[in-house]
Length: 401
Image (cartoon, rainbow, N blue to C red; front, side, top):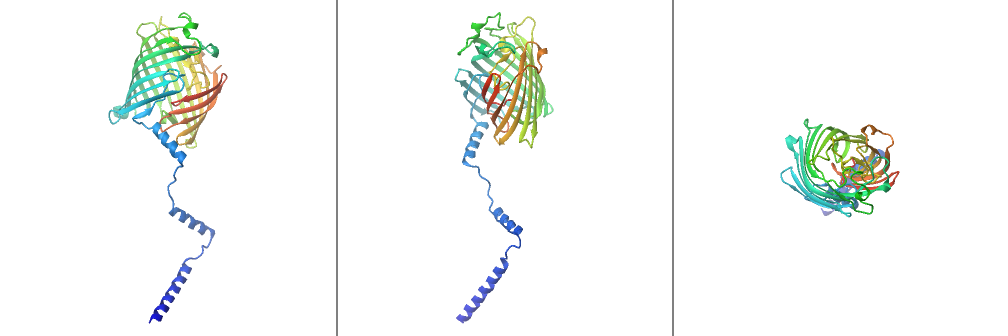
């Protein structure tokens, strides 16, 4: 009986082995081999994981771009103040409304303290209200003279202190694109002698040769804008759409000596290429002033160009006069989800007469830049630029346009 069971077991194993061999046939072609390999890989797929360096940069990027309670604040008190250190504390006072208290300081003494209340969802998400109050001081603001003939070596410095309280309301009546904005500000500009390694303006000029020297005007500043805004995904970081608008300013001086009007014309267009991997961005801005009868426009309130947002190879406030015009073009390339590279060109001029604002005899520069951004903000911009007054290096905490 035992021998019979052993024979039966052997026969069963032999039959099973033949069936297994018959079932494991060799693939008939190379295509079948590839299909089998792909099927085996698909069964073992796992999500791709970023490397340690990418994980670190992502965490750092998210910490700066997110609206956190305690956050860095890199905004300078005034252009030309140099490297800025600052922080802020943001608190939600309702599901949408925020209060942000912040301050910054630079190594040459530029200071800024302010608080801002923002209500971004008014009128069924058509309106945006901002109320801002604060104080700032700039100690070494450059003045080079008026017009295109001013020389770099003729720099003199001035300083100022400015308390301010402002409210601004922005409404999209049709929810998208069409924009109406209005604002009211009460402020004092207290112009003082300059600090630094160059002469102070009061050592070079007199009140007869420099309008507004030593002035301390108190202004009621009202403004109104009508425009068309289709920028996306956000104004602080746009890859498509544009903005076209006109803003009218009225500066009424309480003493009746330094009042004036100003009109700004601005156009921006972002042209996406290759599904927004490349973007051609264009910008033009003109500022024109109109004096009020018998009143003087102080030199420190006149339009100017030069610095990290217009003529980037030139010192801040390098060119100044009653009217200004500048144009910019950029080719932006997306490197990854939070870094862009850009090649750019800037050109601009100032003029005493509005009729002289044309494209002739402009100062210009070109360069390359890198931008660290989120979906709707650009907290860090680094650019190397060159013009006919030399090279420039820009560190900024905002988009260029």
